Image (cartoon, rainbow, N blue to C red; front, side, top):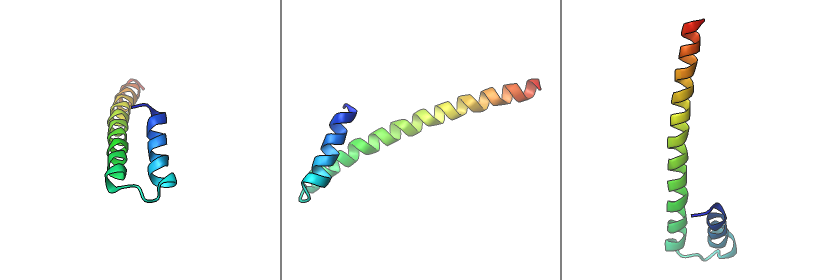
Length: 61
């Protein structure tokens, strides 16, 4: 799902439609949580790689 689609759905469900159904808000929340989960996993990988590189540099010093 494209970022614009997510943004539009969030905006529609939460701002333009104050009476959005629970199902609509739940569907959007699930998408956002999935994105946050993926970003968290990616960040963990990046941090692990950087930690390994720092350890190598410190070992050489």
